[in-house]
Structure formats: C-alpha cells, structure tokens
Amino acid sequence: MEGVEFWRGLDRVARHALPAVSIAIVMILLAIPGLVPLQAGVRVGFVMASVYFWSLYRPAALPAPLVAVLGVLLDLLGASPLGLWAVLLLLEQAAMATIRRALVRRGFLMVWLVFAGFVAVLTAAEYAARAVLDLAMLPPAPILAQGIVTILIYPLLAVALIRAHRGAAAPEQA
Figure 1: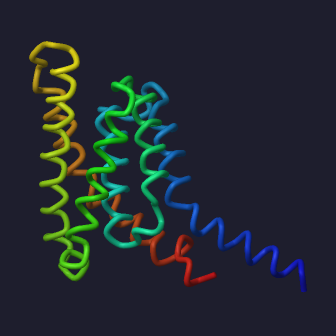
Figure 2: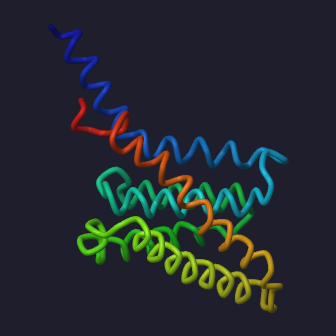
C-alpha cells in the first residue's frame, strides 16, 4: 500500500510541475542555434504565451517565484539584461490575476485579443528598457517581428496547452 501512495504522490508532483518544467525544456531547446526561424522571437513568444495561458486557466501551476526563475532563464538564453524578462513576466502574471475572472469565461478570440494587447505592452516595455540601458534608440524592426511572431504563435500553442491542461497536467486527474 505504501508503494501505491508513493507513486500517486510522484504522479501528483509531476502533474503540478509539468507547466514550469515544459516551459524550461522548450526554452532551452529553442536556444539551440538554427532550430527554428526567428528563434529569439519564438522563444520569447513561447514563454509569454505560456505564462499568459497558465495564469489564465490554472494560476497555481506557475507561482510567481517560478515565473521569475523562468524570466531569468529567458534573459540568460537570449542575452537580455538580467532580470528584464523576470520583471516583465511577473507584470504579465500580476495583470492576468486582476482580469482573470472576467477573461476566463470569454471565447478564444477575446482571449487572443487580450493576449495581443499584453504582447504590445510587454514588447514596448522591453524596447524601452533596452533603449534606456543602451542609452540609444534601437531599431524597431526586431522587436516588432518578435511581437508579431508572439501573437501569431499563440493559437498554435494554445491548442497544445489546452490538451495539457485537460490531460496529463490536470491535477484533478491524479
């Protein structure tokens, strides 16, 4: 009987850890040079979309300290100023906490449009922070491309995340 409880406990831990661990693994895979086109934009977009999704549908799956760690990892993999994405992702998560109840009942199109708004704000904040830290105006094309890629990958990513949310990652299945 003790063996069964051990495996149930391990299963429960794995289900709770799936969102954070899968984000970290995909982020690391997306750091492999030449893996996908527009790699940096896809990596940032994947993380922003994942934090948005889990903050909306299962906020307990990604507590703030884990989001901060994922942000620092994103900074390290993308050569961003250390802490920039940790702050931006925590702001995204905090903003989602304030609108979550109203948004969770909405259809996909509304969820996607709100996500596009988050992308616009976060990419503008990233651009401003980088410009201030570099003491120079930066070319806007890379950040615009990153924003567009992020908005466009959300529907594809949402399909996979919805399956994980309802399937293997669902704690109530344990």
